[in-house]
Length: 225
Image 1 (cartoon, helix red, strand yellow):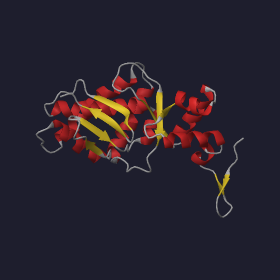
Image 2 (cartoon, one colour; image 1 turned 90 degrees about the horizontal axis):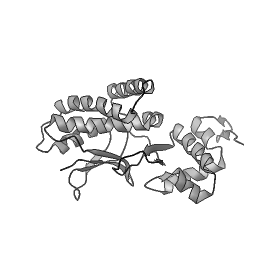
Image 3 (cartoon, one colour; image 1 turned 180 degrees about the vertical axis):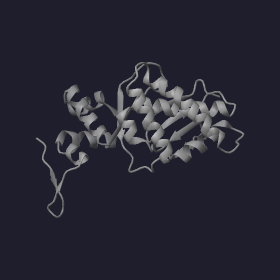
Image 4 (cartoon, helix red, strand yellow; image 1 turned 30 degrees about the horizontal axis):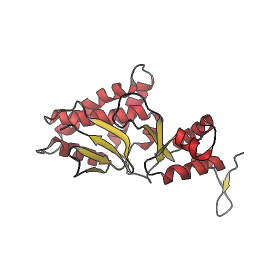
């Protein structure tokens, strides 16, 4: 049974997040995911709680719908469709520029009505977007630095990993609410943007991988040398 929370002055707090946390099981699951820096799959949560898999999936998706968790497929760069992995949403990341948010939302709406491979279709759209963004960026000797500049402007908090040439960690996501609506499409879009940037600057976009939850506190972009 879920009951509304009461605020400090006695008023009823009735927001989607508070309603989602009206279940003790969901509160426990949220705490588990927050404690796991790299996120958890539904199977991981089942192993920790003993709850039925379908029940866990329902709780996780409810937490994701309200913005408390973010989900994406953590492929580790391998082909196929692995299970969803959930991690705690970062605290109020700065939103992307309005024009980009409108474009991303329009793309999601289009893809939701079309069939086929959503991630690949989004990646193809992202490539064109990436080429446009790269054309407006400063000149860099290394195309990967252009990726960093563009994604910094979009609000992703990118950082190159000195010990891993061609690797970028994305520490925030300014499109979190859109990721919650269609993770495959948004992750595919961002992968396509990286590829488009690299191609526009003379790099090789093919073979580039974007790994959701590839690091404990970040998504990971890997550009082949």
